[in-house]
Length: 241
Image 1 (cartoon, one colour):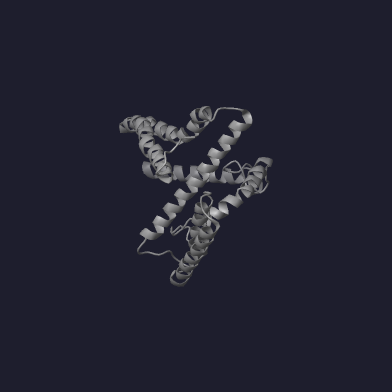
Image 2 (cartoon, helix red, strand yellow; image 1 turned 60 degrees about the vertical axis):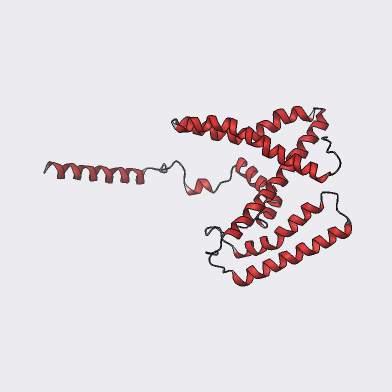
């Protein structure tokens, strides 16, 4: 009997709490739908900033293939199959060591290759769901194009850093040791802090990552780039600028 009374008391208290919240003029979460309709100046600024990023976001979406079910779009996939080879040809032709005839032929090959892929995907893919079999080519294409966009953004950031060094009269080596090093290591800093705060094995993983990251970047990042630079200048010597 006592348990039943207690349960009834809890039910009565819940009902009174709900009725009190319903009669209260203050919303439950501190805001209402009417408040969210009013755009603040800060929200308008970020909205305008997002519109300014559209010239970079749209080409990226039209060249990186996504086969995830929640983000599946047959139109984007067909467009990425057409524009991805053209982007690769454009990056290859802008290196400066390509003649006009070879560049035109490569552009034609890229357009024909992209058109063929897009036609095949338009015929065989479904609009309501992504492909369920043989996903490796799709994932590999998205992975490779993501690396290509990393390459583009990295080149632009380095060019911007060099331009700032020329304008401000700062040695590029100093900018590399300060600004570029901080920007490159910020992601590792956040991940290592998150791992170290969890304790346990996370501390050892974070401490190992502090040394393993630079050790990996030195032989692979610097080594592969120097190897490609020396290979492009063979049989002459490769002079570091």
